[in-house]
Image (cartoon, rainbow, N blue to C red; front, side, top):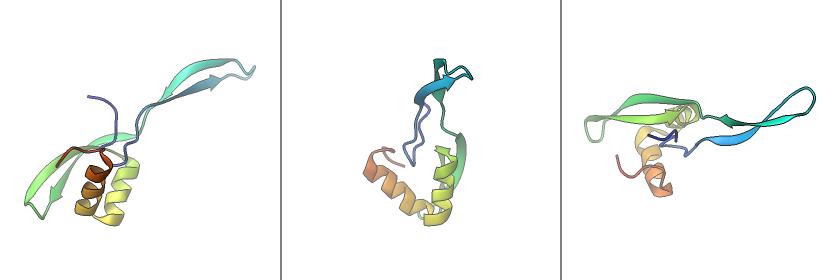
Length: 80
């Protein structure tokens, strides 16, 4: 399974390690992902999401149902 947040769409980025002498070598920046269970009260069931720390804050701010609907609309999540 790929390292992509199902709420925000954050995924792997590439960049450079830059040494003191300014030599550049390729590196990867991974998103801060967690596997977390949420209770969806509207459907009376639990769902498991692979979600970033920013996605968790987004759910805390806007609510689970609204955040999931936006993720489906943007195409980050197929269905829940």
